[in-house]
Image (tube, rainbow, N blue to C red; front, side):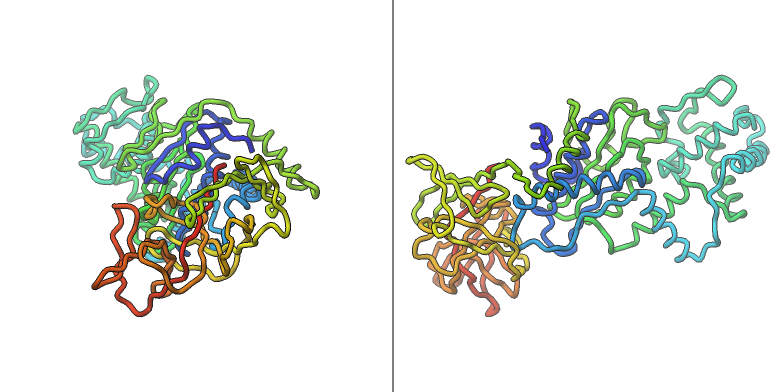
Length: 500
């Protein structure tokens, strides 16, 4: 699918703890976030437990997201083809409501609660009016305690719970914005630390007591109980979370999503915000026309999509293309091959549909290499240029290069790099490194090393009294080789850089 520069910049940006994509409906936020999920899956899901969750706002959105994901996955499968990936689907699409309900059921089972029913509006009105009369006995001179204001108090209690102001000090001092009442339906203003606020908080406590006595629960309580349960769970966490429509998230829901987050140095959480939607008064993410990132706990990286994106048209076109048996994807991959042995480089291209045909551009012009002129190299599971990770020995793809580039080389294979510890040696995250399989290396060689069943890519440093694996990035520390369970897999002789 055709992507804008803003989308491409977001898709390939380094993961940040929090980020937002802001734009009107139809500006391409969803499709860009799905491309982003595949980029994260193939570059920043380093371990088996790393998973990606996209939270949809309703069930109808799940099929739409899944359809686009399948199309984009097929479109990018060669771009992300490594012999280090695994077939497990790491991308999960669920509704926020379904996950909250699951954790709520866990809460009920843990505390052996009776079967609560979600309370309806008529029942709420009846209960809140009785509560108003009870609290009127405590504050007889407070004029706002009027049963005609029942709807006002229901909405105020909903706001208190949605914002998790479950302690009186929290509510008494909270900034209460965005609340407007028609004349005769409620007070125009409730000052901080006022008697009115104290009375409303007591009203909420009494309301909760009556719900509990009748084995009832409202939607706000379900969210609160689910949050409390999620905060105690150590499993079923997600390394990357994308929230499809986050405009109307409440504070409790944001906290719940945070509780699902498996925070690592490369983890990320992204919120898609529709700026042209009407947001409810309990929204914690959007205040008026401003995105509020303060509840995330730190500044969020912001992306803004301003132009209309022809998502549906592109989706239909791609569906037609994928269903065509004689499809020529009509898109070339551009690469640069860096020869570490001879300090030279070549620009080359290959077609998505015929990866065994290589077109090289050099000083003599373009030349297409085919069949016997090419060397077939197996690609295996990713190797970490950073922390060691386990290599999957099962071959997952092939790469073809002109034979004369690797003249005299036998038993070579390719590993795809994940990490940034070798950037000083021009080896970046996502690069393909050509490894000549051998169990010995010279001082200063870049080597792939197995350390107790895990693999890493570093520069070999042989000193008088010790052997080190040196990173090419000052934020990483050298690895001291002091174990017999360590051996060289091979030496790096070339780098393939994807330029698309």
